[in-house]
Image (cartoon, rainbow, N blue to C red):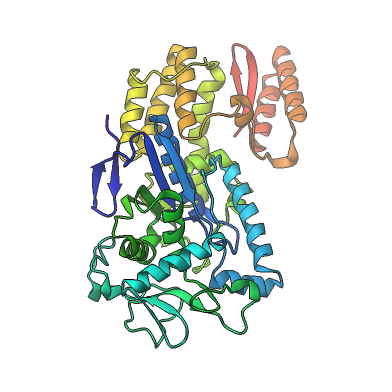
Length: 460
């Protein structure tokens, strides 16, 4: 099988092979750290975590870079509002980001560069663009990119120059030569804190948003690399501008493959902080366990829209319980994955077709049914091993099934005491009392399951 990836640049699913045999270089745009991450950020992190995991499972060495934007208008405004330093705010938010990512079993990227550590590289890149006539200085001290001077502008978004609009995060300045032009270097303002200002060939100021990723990706992965990823909202203008900057300076293709994950939606609107309809990762994890959230994300293809609701999370939890129930009933044997196995081969085919997690998850359910039928420890081991590639099914099955909240605050000892009382009622043939205990526990979120080995329980 050959790995095939949908390439936003070509608008088709293309066969993938890395520029350097056996080594994949991957860059993903990370978060602007002025606030806690929301579920939309989780969707992107999980999507590219699976990309990294599958590339490794396929035998590639992976260098994965996911940047942190730690200087930005919103960051400055939030730090001033909070009465704290920019570094204090961004350090706190980076720590929170990593805690949230760890909770969701997202593997750390190889490198996680912060924009403020690469300002010299950004200035160097701006200088190269100016020398080539692609950047110009404005009367207000800003340095802007001259979009119409770059012949390939619009190739990622597929739009002509006349269809496009300026993509900067602030209003179009009057001293830009063209509304499409975007800022590379922002001249310092008197009321901005000193830590938001760097000195260089263009005077005191700070980098624009887009130049950050061009400088960091080229510095860490080279002028051309294999995959550039991010959310669909970044395709234009951010990624379009990255191409213009990087390729304008180097004359080389920036990335061979461009990948974009779909939005998380609430009531058919994109989840975003600007719309105020977002849920932070921490808010969601207060109601649902992390593996359920991860599973909810992976049941949809990374390019599709993902509709958030409690009902969808509840359904994901119940579906995931079916997989853990199979592993709870049959101890999993250890062993390497045999990719010639029928289930493993279909899992591989699904993942090789643009990281098709919905189809791969369907294989896990078929395999769970086979485990329940055959009682095979080898099949259970394969289920657990394939799940591991998606970051799933690595918890103790009984602990997972018994995890979560229970109405009335029943702890494990109290539940076990009720199970013993029910067993005594059954031994005395007091069936009404046994049924009452079962019903009372169910009303408190505890489901009893009778089997040959006795009565077990799980969260309902």
